[in-house]
Length: 105
Image (cartoon, rainbow, N blue to C red; front, side, top):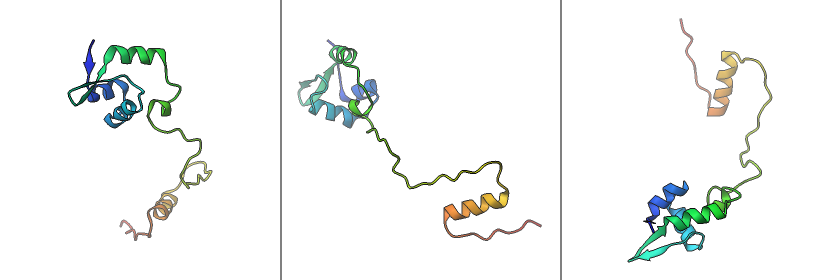
């Protein structure tokens, strides 16, 4: 039986160390205590993953799935190419106060 530590488990699962600790505390992955350190039996982890494939990233302890976008961004339908003046005006509007631009001579 091969025992791996938390950072190795995190790398194997593709999650951060804290997620592995959370999964251990929730009883989602097998572990043994060696002195005061968590060790995960690699073979048991592999067989558990093979037996119970996760349905989504959120159930694996990753990013929560959201059905709606939380930004207030509005997308204006535009087509074609914008002129330099239009791009400058758009950027000035997005970045805040207008800037004075020097004309090239």
